[in-house]
Length: 301
Length: 335
Image (cartoon, rainbow over all chains, first blue to last red; front, side, top):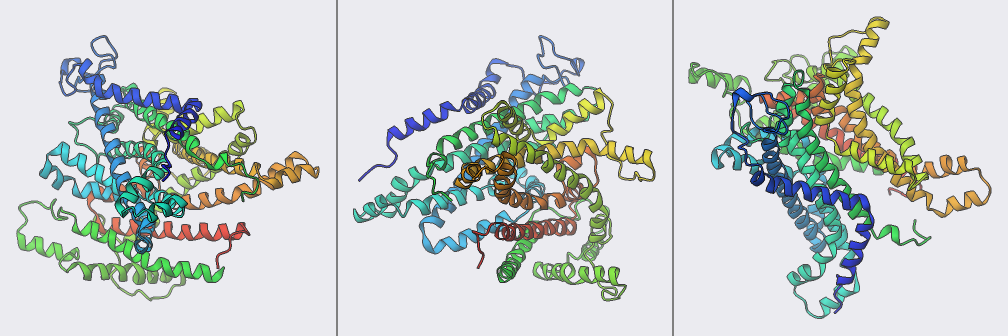
């Protein structure tokens, strides 16, 4: 039995990816941002919630490198704390969306009688106006969830769930297409003949081979989730005011746009830089994994 | 082709009914009471009567049926009455907004022009800028123009409107003081001077929205052009001595436009849906702003109706995009 995902292929992928300089830079910047928001609060040990009303609305100074807000809270500490939540929401929502989409796509591609129904469901979800429904979901369920799990955990679960449930469809379609293509290959026939059980078939042969489209959509999924969470926070439907996320910081700063216009720059730049870095990585991954452009057969229609 | 179109429309009807039901149930099953804001001093029996006046006394399936009847039968009648001067609707109950106690459709019609002007203008402008960028970037692949263009479109694609909008206000309204940051909907265009005011207040929201459209469409245009430029017929066209302009702008462009036009059609529902965030930032009182304020106020009939109309538009433009594909590309036949 041949193992399709040989180590040599991974090395070739890495080489193609590293040739895309923008993608490498993007990945490096994203990892740096994750490291900064993860480790930053251990190095910059200022409480993001500590109010110092005498030092409010300060500009950048050694004590407060990014200045302070209208209650004298340190902007750098808030930016780092906010980044933690934003990045965590992005990763968790991506994982949920990937899990849902992967499961639906795998079932639709592998189990014939489920295909029709699951694909109609995917089409139905794709035709829903997602942003309005997302807003409605968050608006209607936030209080009961906040009461059940506490304000931070409740809202975190709600936002991750709402983003995940409205963004799994492209992944499902990609995975289904990849599964349909792979199941006709000879090595699957060989595995069938060798008496491989269904579960082993999926975990050993199908999953490793659908990883490449999943990887690209996972990358872009993080960016999408971070932007959506920030948009919700910006509209006042995200985390409660005590938990700064980047969207929330931006939204709070717009109130003081006339007097302190500089304050919107940091959270906005943090969101934009993160999303840009992720999108660059996704582009590079797609180029590295896309076999279509390397098959330069002239007969391709 | 016609039978395909009819079949697609027929198939979309049950899908839309399920969509309407999903939206309805989501709103209906949600915890939270529309009467929550009524003061505690109001006695319970009066609260019960207020609840009935809002149509909340009846079970879910009856209310869903009534909404369907009002939306699909009464509202078209009202519309026909207004156009033809007949009296079909008489005094039948219309979908009423809880917030304003006036018919939902009247408010939608009121909000539509602002959204169409600002968001529609941005869409058209964004496409007009995107196409040449995409064409040139693909034609000169890996050139400086392509590299810079790709970087800028990726930046435009990555910067969310709630930052670019705020940034535009900081630069153009606060620092430079060139343009107003708030869109005044009551402004009437009567002469040249009021026209320039209208243009000035439209620049910022249109610019913020157009940058996003440009970023998306030019990426598609570039990819589609690159796909076509590698084809054999391009080599044939050059070999038989056609000049470069004809080859690129006629032979290549016409074939590359097929997927791009589909993408443009698929994006059109957003124009009608309004741009929720951008409208909120610049205080344009269009449909997006109507939707967000109704969601915050818990105005269920309004949210239900506007969201469902968006779903109808999405499904309709999906069908349009598929039909366009068949019309433009003779290799694709819908039979």
